[in-house]
Length: 489
Image (cartoon, rainbow, N blue to C red):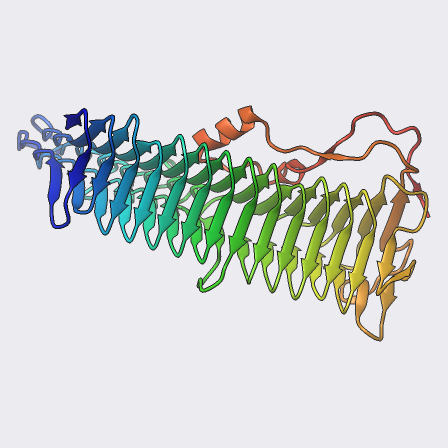
């Protein structure tokens, strides 16, 4: 549908594009005769210079593959709503693209949904793309799915869901791989997500065999904003599909302004990544990053935060079963029961102070901290190494001191209040498992915020960063060589 003015789908209205089912093939022999015909494509396209308003339902459905001996591929499904000069409003509606089912050795159909406008507002609606499964046991792959929202202005998602679902691969002695799932939300302005869910889930692979392993579908969720990113009682999740080779799951939030995750009235994790393969969450802002009111980041792999100032408050937490990384050109502040946990070490790099008040930082086994200012630990706050190994604390700008327990410099642990540095649950010992190094001054470390090229690459990929390299995501860049090596004291 093309129109020079506005396009409206009224409440109760319905627009559908549906592909036809493929025809049957020959029938002799296990795979005798021709394969079943492929399903037809189902496509819905709105293109206008004016506004697009959808209060009814819009769907595209790929046709199923033919049922001949070989089977046919499922048809492609696409919904494309584009306003070259106006905004897009989706209210109280279902907008969906669903690939057609594959038959026997025919693959499940791919699905793609895209919204492009000067502004995008989604309220009380469901926007989704889903690849299709394989109907009969064979060895074909499940269909992949992509959902894209792109705006030259702002994007607002309220009381709604936006998702992509890769389909499971065929179940047989050979099996098929799961389909990938990608959600990409990009705005030149800000992105606000309120009481809503964003989800990408890769399909699981079939049974397979040792000689021909199948893979789970990868899952990727990316938000790119020129302005702020705000989550208010909302959640984002990515799950790679399960298989002999599990699918990876990666989530990336990058903002030119601030990023705020506020879990007020939300249930479950604010951001979560997991599934069958490696998992990663990266949250990076040119401004500040704040987790408030119990907001949470939970990854079965790695997780990292980066910004000018990074703050976690009121039981908010960052949890990574592998490494947890935080980088700030300014300060890192944890207050009121907040926490950072790295199951494969915790890495903290700041240009300013680190404050841990009634909260904790835990790395298992180790904690690595490079602090441009000083460290303040107060009111039963702790910095813990999970094993009786080491806490590495470096002050590149100082020659001595630099850490304060309940306001007193040089104290390692206050047993009366349970405040300070600990290793394996016991008070740390300076020089044994609390190793402090000083740089004696020099240039202030600078946070390596992802470059434009990296942002584009992350937006195009569903592969999370390598688990062993993730700890370097927010490493400080040195502006010059250190004049002398750090000295342990």
